[in-house]
Length: 349
Ligand code: NAP
Ligand code: ZN
Image 1 (tube, rainbow, N blue to C red):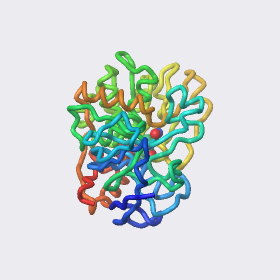
Image 2: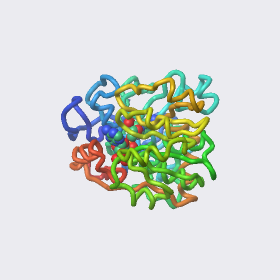
Image 3: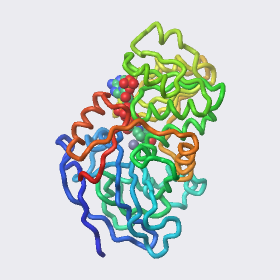
Image 4: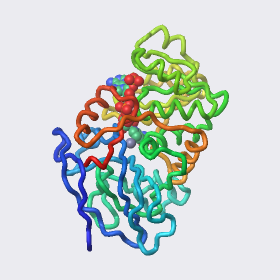
């Protein structure tokens, strides 16, 4: 087997800074695409994973699941992509294709556990998958997205995770004109949730700590901004929402947010803190409320979301960083000082 050595930036343990290292990419198989990576977004999940918030992992580990680049080579049986195409890779890089969920097109909910772009066992060679903070990646063609014309490549990277993770639940819960949507936490995911909900015609309320993001929220299309530390403002909103998307990366007082839901309202958890939520029975019972979860989106849905962005001129707000700024960028994500997604210029690796 001929592997390719590429430069990357990754973790060698749970607590230290990320460092420059090299990783091996598998040989391009008949159904594989070799992608020269141009941009990789920084998702809070990258940090949770490396810091062990979701359980122990094996190091070294390179993260990054918001990847945009150009096809550099294709396997002999590839039909979906051509050399030179602008393409993307998101959170999932494979799935079994045979289970009930995969057969219904829900590959992100593969019953055997889909192959994540990083920190998964690669079915192709048994190694641990390594993500996008790197120069190149080899991915099965079915999990490579075509980037529509008109999208700025650097601003497209965050759509592959932050974009689809908020678009998918908004579509699943049929958000449209008349739906009162609340978005809790306005970071990478949250700001995309606001843009999508507004573009779908919903009445959008942003729930964020303090007032620093008020102007931005309104610019992104929100109709209302509530400072979650303002008890009176939170009280006024009680029963006033149909759907809440919780994007917060830390534990929150879920009771306070459930009380904002009207009858039959749903709070969708997409933020994935290490700590469990505490949900009192009587925060759900009196208004037949639901609490739900959602992960990313299927490959078909990601393609639909990319097309939706191209048609509606939607893009994330990004700040381009070089490799030597990644550790600082992580610190800024942890202190919610990101406006609103860092994207690594992988040429600087
Ligand atoms: P992010 O950019 O750091 O945004 C998280 C936001 O949460 C912050 O901007 C902040 O919003 C709020 N927040 C942070 N700490 C908080 C605290 N202690 N108390 C209250 N609010 C706090 O992160 P992200 O990349 O958007 O990811 C958000 C979460 O979603 C992470 O847990 C990530 O792992 C998860 N995620 C899940 C999926 C999925 O498939 N379900 C996919 C991607 C990411 P304000 O400053 O506005 O209050
Ligand atoms: Zn992510």
